[in-house]
Length: 310
Image 1 (cartoon, rainbow, N blue to C red):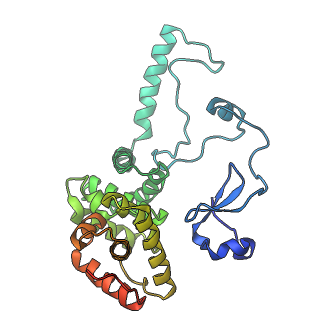
Image 2 (cartoon, helix red, strand yellow; image 1 turned 120 degrees about the horizontal axis):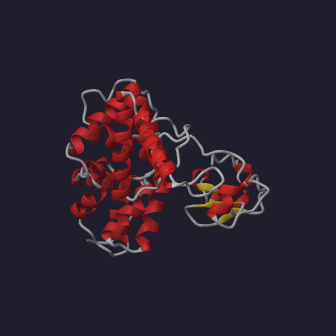
């Protein structure tokens, strides 16, 4: 849900919680800061349905609207699916009618993917679902990636190119749009073409579809890198503080978010005595050792950070 929560409503807490980290929890009716876990405001008016449902079955039965459109299906999920087991009242069909319904359902499945683009979209849907599952990404990424892939297919960008690479590029683009910190290297490892092909297809998609990619906040990379390196939560907190300070001074503009996060973690680990080499941190972040070294020197110098003797 889009957050229209303005700065003047957050009160004194907005000083601690930057606006971009405040999200709305529809079920609880609360605005929550994802950075600190603080409840900024509660008792917000519920704009949901007036009825209650305690099970998924009740929710489906009481809802007065149909299913939302889905980019994962060639027909957007508009067409109904023929059931081969029960009639409209829920009674079991006779064996003869059941066989006929099954035959009609198979025919309907073929008609849904009559054109080459529809068949391509159906195959891409399976590949994107596989990548999202292997990367442990939220299911909502599938719909965003499929929307991007569908636009690319309808514009003829997928013709003559690997379906795997285009699907992987769509997943990476969806992660960038949703602000999920996944590197192109992580995604490239899961397909035959590798990182180079994913990067080439991604650049093509962004250029031809004229997608304006949001700038990824380097703080979003901190938790992932810290987890890989098995560092403490104190290092994670201190690295986030360094990045917030760097952003206020304009040091993050135009820099690789993963590289900045890696450098901040390196500085925080040195300060707290949890030493890791630049090579270890660079590998965990998916950047080069030179990038970590350059960003580290810049952060220490510009923020005037005093490190303990090494």
